[in-house]
Length: 587
Image (cartoon, rainbow, N blue to C red):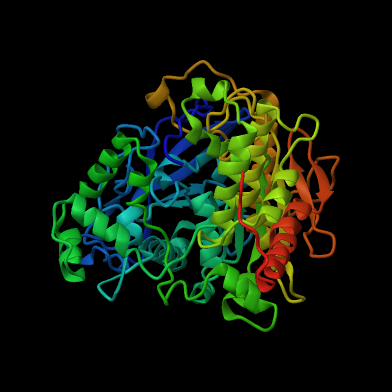
């Protein structure tokens, strides 16, 4: 996701004079501000509490440790400005008001100044941001409009990223997955304190996008989250995405230490180096790697979730297989959570950014040789492992599946196949697989699925003009009511969002907030769409909702692609390997 350039919307809301509001929590008094917001010509009041610490600063001896609960406030805490964002590469061209620091474990709360839908209080929507677990911040997603239109409390959070979030030395001094533990700690904070804000702790919905979406599913697979949330909304990413889970990140740790000119003869020396380096040093190292222009050099410093034996004991794929023969604790907990899961129509367009700048991408052509001997072998290795040889017969099947036979060697058609292939492998098939895992039980909670196909006027992730389909992240504008502070960054002040997009945004915010309130996207506010109610997703008919200018419903979303990659190819590979007849890959 490096190098993403965001095209921005104008701010569609206006804030009036702010007035002070306060709540008293278990940690002490918190002072926020009441402000005004407008959406579709309707004015709302919303209370916002920004930059609340939910854990102790993860610095000094708490670096590379699980988060510890925040301490009580000795004096009233003024929550009127955002807290620092976590150390990271500045991939998103953040506003200057976003300051980076290791002391970054803050959350933001948006409370509608309206009567709650239930006597128990407002339903709560807890958002986990994306960014490849390497960049991003909850500060970027103001919740005023979603909170007001949906009449729900919205919470956004920061969590540790990159090295500070996912270093695993296979050592009790640095056991990994700290970013996930941060998310878990923030959920505990909400459970213990949200009632003070008028929230219902028993109606918490976690939702996220991209890496935040996969984080949601990892939280769904952690049984000790029981009681912390009831529903989950998964936008473009699951724990079944094809990234490898290892037992440690020692190689990346050693590379960071070497780049910092430290001795790397022993684990102790590496860890001492990483513990003592300034908080901004890992970012400096990553910037130097980016400047080199060498992708392999950049990948040397990637840290990802690991099988730490605590938060993640088995991969989601292993859990999926084990659940077919018996009860698995992680899967049973997952199935107790109501789920909305979805993807965008052209998720794979995100990956063409690696082919050059936007001017180059406008004229991008993919040759048949590139497709056959670079793209497909790379995808095969990502799915089946780099130790697997790609048999020629399997390669031919994949080529056939990802060829537009109206012009099989047309370089302009092949670029669309590259988009489709990357979308299938990274988002569509993992998304379907997770919905099938979730719904494949007579005791499972409700499952819903969607495909977002709306071609928004100004997409979040910049795309060349030939990709006229919904790209990765395009649903975020509608989900948050186009409530983004882009004026400071891009000075975009005159643009008007098309009326149909605002209408779509209103409907999506209603679906999302309905689900938070009732675990059903259709209730309590019924859909006005001709498509009728959003159908439940089941293994038998796999119904889903299409979100566009006008909604529609369908069946068996990406079922053919799922069957091809999850059933046909594995069985063929098994036969070839068992017969020792796997032929080698040739031109």
